[in-house]
Image 1 (cartoon, rainbow, N blue to C red):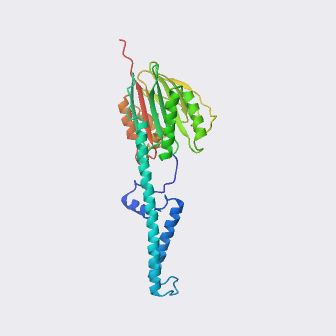
Image 2: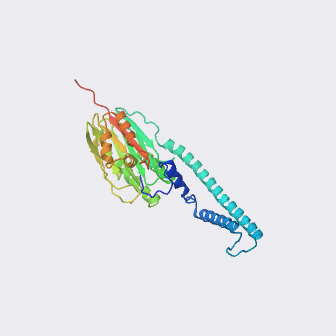
Length: 333
């Protein structure tokens, strides 16, 4: 889920000269903890003062005090002490970021085990997926769970924010979906129970949009709950039907109301589920229109078209796409 923010880091998409200027004026201490940032800037200012004192040969210019020899010794000591302090702060920050990167790599490996890397064949259906996290770990989640009696649960969720916090909440949702689906796979029960859990056990500024669809493979009937998520699309032969939201995002209010609606995937129809990282990365005034134009009869063609819509200059969020097509019924002639 995309959050609007002010860019403070140099833009990697800028030209070399502009990027060099941005780095020259970028505050490299911005991401430090406040205490380290203050100490680093104190060290920088002391070094500047020491250089100034050496240049004017006085600690309190325009007075020539103390003598040049003492001024030189004091300035040198101040410069070296401040230099050592700044190096210590930068080294500790390097160690901290190295540890964070190591933790992120471990989290990425764990998340890769939670997100399906390949999709198991679904009798009577063709499926393709794309999962593209914006950072090492992402806040998007999707799953395809095979159930008894010819049913399949499709789940897609998008957690607010990015990075480690969003990934942890996405992993929580994945665990909840898997555990609840074993007992009560109905989308309405999933939405209600997950919403109550997130409302009680997550910070108030954290929430997730999600859509849960229970597919009866034989008939193509869908029972779904859309919790404030981008509307999935059922399409074929140029016609489209959007499965609009039936409730608010998960985790906002414990007593939030949700409704379950039904739809049908007929023979030859396709179902597209996606997160807002897809539409946000489309370079157009009307991304929904371009998304509709990318839908084709072939699953492979549709996925190729959707991947081509993702513009790296606009992509600032995780992108998840799940595409399901029901096989055409054999001709009776």
